[in-house]
Amino acid sequence: MPLYIYAFLTAMVIAYVVTPGVIKLAWKIGAIDVPRDSRRVHKKPIPRLGGLAIFIAFTAAGLVTLPLNFSSIKGMLLGGAFIVIIGILDDIYSLPPKVKLLGQTAAAGILLLFGLEVEWVTNPLGGMIYLGRWSIPITLFWVVGITNTLNFIDGLDGLAAGIAAIASVTMMLVNLSLHQTNAVLVTALLAGSAVGFLPHNFNPARIFMGDTGAMFLGFILSAVAIDGAVKSATAIALIVPILALGLPIFDTAFAILRRFMNGKPIMQADKGHLHHRLMAIGLSQKQAVLFMYFVSISLGICSIILAKLGIKEAIIALFVVLITLMFSIRQFNISREAKKSTHSM
Image 1 (cartoon, rainbow, N blue to C red):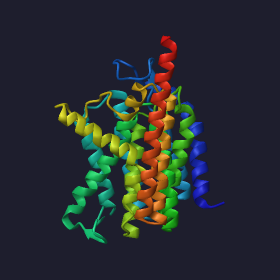
Image 2: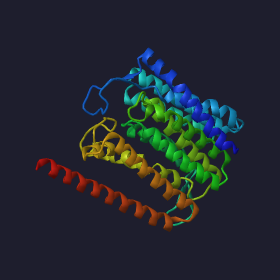
Image 3: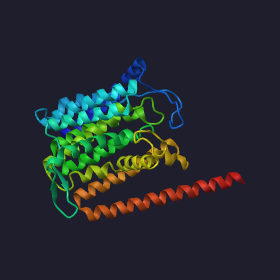
Image 4: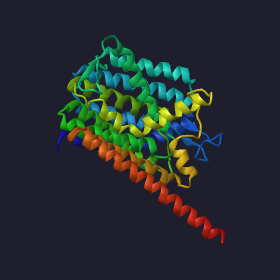
C-alpha cells in the first residue's frame, strides 16, 4: 500500500473515532454554537469544537507518516498547532476579529521562520517573477487569506469539511504528478482527517468544526501550496490550489467586496454568501451543500487538467463547467416555478 493511502486511511479512522469524544468535551467546556440571529441556519445549540478532532487526526497520523526532519513539515505542524489554539479560544470565548487576525498572522510568521514563503509568482506573459522583498508580505497575505476562505464559507453542515477534502484530494493528485512527496502526504492526511470528520458533521450535524477546524484546514492548505511552489518552481504550482479552492476564494472575495460597497466591516457576518443564496432560491441545506461539492469537484478537475494538459484545455473545461452550472440553476428555477403554479391552481 502506498504511504499516502496509508496516511489518508489512518487520519480518516482517527478523526471518525475521536470526534464523539470531542463532542462530549465541547459540551463540557461550553464550546457551543447557540443560534441567536436569523443568519444561522441551524435552530438548536450545536457543539463547535470539531476542528480539534481534525487536528488530532492529522497530527497523530502525521507523526507516523511524515518525514519530520524537513523544516517545512516542522513549520506546518507548529503553525497548525498555533492556529488551532487560536481557534479553540475563539470557539469558547468568541475572540474579537482583530485578535483572530493577529493570531493568523503570527501562525503565518511561523511558516516564514521555517523557510516557507512565496518567492515566485506566475507571469501572465510566460515564466515566473521573483518577488524579492515582497515575498514576506505576499506570503502573509496568502496564508491569512486562504485561512479565512474556509472560515467564511463554513455556514452549512458539512460544507467546509467537504470542500477542504475535495481541494486536498485535488492537490494530492497534482502533487503526485509533480513528484512532490511531502506535499502528497500532507494533503492525503488533510483529506483523510476531513473525510473522517464529515459523517459527524454532515446534515443533520452533531458537531461543527468551528473556527478551530476551518482555520486549521485553510492554514495547512495554504502552507502546502507554498511548499509545492518552493520545490517545483513551476507556473502551475500556485495556480492549481487557487483553482482547487476557487469556490471559497470567490465567495470570500465577493463577500469582502459586498461589505465594502455597503459600508460594513469586512469581518461582519451576513446572509449574502453563495450557500445562503442557493437556499434563498429554494434548495434545501443538503441540496445546497451537494451543489457546492459539485462545483468544487468540477474546479478540481479543471485544475488537474491544467496540470496535466495545459491552460487552453483547462479554460475549455472551465467554460463547460460554467455552462453546466447555469443550465442546472435555470432548470431548477423552471421546475420550482412549475410547482408553484401547480400548487396555486
